[in-house]
Length: 252
Image (cartoon, rainbow, N blue to C red; front, side, top):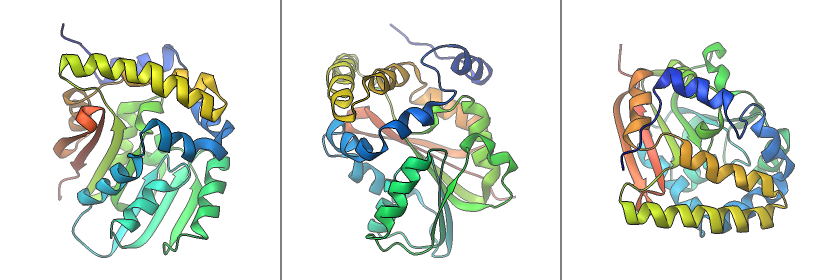
């Protein structure tokens, strides 16, 4: 059976009108910020750090990069980029959750990454952000915003010409037997075990629901094209259960 997903306008309306609510989802993550990293390690079967390092492959080939990581959480994406060998002129981690950022700052004391700036900020308001970047990343965050098309347009506007966005996000396998196994994995492992580890079962009921209803594959690439990105590409990981979506802002 073919699945159909909403276009950009319908998606923005759908995200704001149907549950689980994304309006203040960052507060939900902030409730268990001290257990967030442990929950990620376990529900990803220990693969999440490797997936984050893979994001470095999509960075522009230059050494004076200005990088922005949106929905940075506890900072693991920026730390993974550095561990993968990426070097930058400046790096900024932005999140609305102050508790998560406090963990990122604490970890940064023991992980020597130069020039990381941790700021509270809203990924949906990038169109108001005057600074431009060469590389913008977002891991497991785009699925949680109210206005996905608007956020993608904001990311596009915050890139310099020739800049690249790389979005690491949960996705759905296209092969039917794998899709069924994926649903079971989400409901039994992610929801059950994640809720137990985090101490917040509501949060881990939310995650599978959003993964199963969020545009995946070509549907998400279409949203990136509508936002202005060129050279859009999906790189599936873990048999398609996770993907890196990449796209570039063309040179003027």
